[in-house]
Each structure stands twice: as C-alpha cells, then as structure tokens.
Length: 505
Image (cartoon, rainbow, N blue to C red; front, side, top):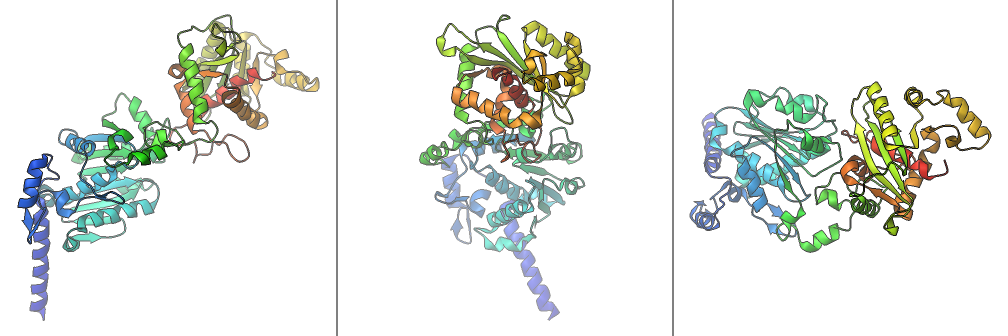
C-alpha cells in the first residue's frame, strides 16, 4: 500500500514538473504576427498547437461580447517598457484591459525558470475591500487553469493567495498595508486602481511609499495602474512631484476604439457626466453633484476669451478667503466685476482671475499676502470664513479697520443693514449661510451664466467644482469619504465667499 502511495505521489510530482516546465522558457507574447502564426502551428503539446507563448499556452483573454482577444498595441507598449524600467505607472481609461494583462504577466513570472530557484513574493494591492482582493485571485486562478485544467495541480490556492512553484502571489486590501511590510523577497508589486487608495500623498502609510522601501532590498518592479480619481489625490500629486520615479503612460479611450471598445459603446458612455474622468483621464469629472459640466465649460470659455485682457486696477473686485485649519489649505479666490465690456456679451461678468490653495504656509505670511493682494489689486471687499476670528482681526488690523467686529455685526443685525456699511473685511458665518452660498454660486454659473474662470490661474478651483458634493441637507459635503486623498475644497469655499459681493452685501 505504501509503495502504491509513493508511486502515485511520484507520478503527481512528475506531472506538476511537466506542466511547469512547459511554461518556464517561452516568451510572454510574440510581437511579429507572421512569426507568431508560424510558431503557433509548430508549437504543440499533446497534439494541440498554440504553445508558442505564455498567453496562448494558458489561453487568450476572454471579453464578453468580443470573444477571445490578443494583446493590443498599447498593452504591448507598456509591457515592453518593463525591459528597461522597473517603476511604471498607467493612467488609463476604464475597460482597457490593464488589470488583465497585469494578471497574465504575474502568472508568467511565477512560471519562468529564473523565479523557480528560490522563494519569492508578488503582492497585489487593491482597493480597501477584501472581496476585491479575492476576486483578483479568482481571476488569476482562472487564467492559469482555463486552457490546461491540469495546471490546478501546480497551484495552491486560498481566498487571497496563490502559490505557484516558488512564487507566492497574494492580494492585499490597501488598508491592510502592515501585511506588506515584511516580505522577504518581493520581485513584482502591483498597485491596482492606486488612485483610489484611501491615503493622503504624504502619509507614511501611503502604499506607494511603503512598497518603495523594497527598492534597496530586492529591487522589484513596482507598477501602478488606475483610472483617475480626485484632484489632489495620489496620482495627481505624482504628476507634479519633481522626485517622481515612475515612467508614466497615459492611455485614454481613443487607444481602445475598434479594439476593446465598440464606437457605439463610447458614444453612449459620452452621455455620462463621469465620461471625462473614466475614459478621458480628467481628474474629478462626474464625481460631484453641484455644478453641471456644461456650466463649468461655459465659464472656462469666457475665461479663455478674456485671458488677454489685463485685470484693471479701476474695476470693482472681491476676494474670498478660507484660512487653513487642520490638514486643509489656505484658499484664496479673487474676482473682478466687469459691468461693461468692449464686447457687450461680457457685460456684468464676474471674472475669476485667481484661485489657489496654499499648503502649510506661516500664519503671518498669509496675513502679509492677503494685505498685499488688497492693496495691489485695489480689492474693495474681502469675505472670510467667520470661524477664524484670529485671522480676521489680524487682517483688519493691517488695513486699519476696527478689530472689534462682533459688536458691529450686532449693530448691523439690529438695524437690518448690510455688513458692508460697517467694514470691508467681512466674516461669513458658514453654518448660517452655507446653503445660500452654494445656491448663489449655482445661480451665477448655471442660470445667469455670467461667471468667467481663467483655468490657467484658477485650475484648483475648477478641479474642486468638478468633485464637490452637496448633502441632502443642502450643506457642502466635507466628510472624509467624499473629500479624501488630499482633495480639499478650500478654493471652492473661498470662491463661494468672494461671490457674496454679487449679492446684496
């Protein structure tokens, strides 16, 4: 009985070695079509052709409605970059098949001869939900066994882990980052939908920073794949980081037309407010529910047409300030009122010619900057978040205005008079006025259509407009779930404040 058991075990081991050896020395894919076709017919196993490359050997990717697909030019281009670069990033349209090609490549690495010599790890970091990690492992298992069910004998599988030969492939939810800190020999690290990880860019637990610590240890490939998410998130911050080490590829929907996308499908997708973000690589589009994209587009068109006209010292102007507190930025927006213009279509225009968020600036420096703007631009009224009395007093003091403004507010309320009768630095009480501020901004952009925004000098404001949400109560939604990954609303709030000038003040 023992001899029979040993014989069966030896047979199983031999079969596992046979199946593994079948895949260990073949290329991932063959680019030359004629050569590929020739080798497809010539490379057989058990009488079946198509063991020319790893992809054909395990089976081509299957897309419902399209059938079996080859790798397309953009996927091949990205894979070729791995020959000369270890750190890569893809900003891609949804559905282009990058998660699929990455799973195939990870399976390929697990079978290659060089990775069978000693134990190694291939971690895959996913979104915050465990079921996403489990789905990826299921997809990987199906890829490996779809054409050769016998390969299941080579694979050891749990819900979130697959072991192939000496390679352990494990998927981790992004909030379980501690489990990724102590891997002995990671050779390839995939961060899937990385721009949706719930971390701020400078957080030491940001998964990108955590996995980069393996660079001096095992020098793995580090690959980031994602559709764009919010402005100020991990991806957009990488775009502007001078120390960014990642070779970046941008593949919008046009790369997939008549390949992985039916043009009719794209035309239907264009009707969605999220199309520009999900298919055309624009951060924040279609996320918010306050401003219609057509309203923003109209304001940007007006701003572009006015860009060559200098801001005049003589026009009326307002400035909105949202001082920093906690992890937020100091938001400043400046608006010029063009009551009359050479082109009559611009009469009564509220021109946003500056909007910016200042990060971690010194308190005194921001007082100096705001004072400088008031004097240099000849700003008549400055509206400021009323929850920041210290800053309000400091700025009032700089311009020589009465710092005991609370008594003046009471007097204005008593006589039902506008605060502008008593001061030019005007506090805005968010809790009391928040809904009115949002409604007024929606009126000016959506109904009146008399707002112009210069996107060159106010791009943070435009981004925030696209992802800002309004709660059912009418207040601006600033919950962590909505405003995450560095996507603050400081410029937008300063814009709301500045636009109070155009109500009865």
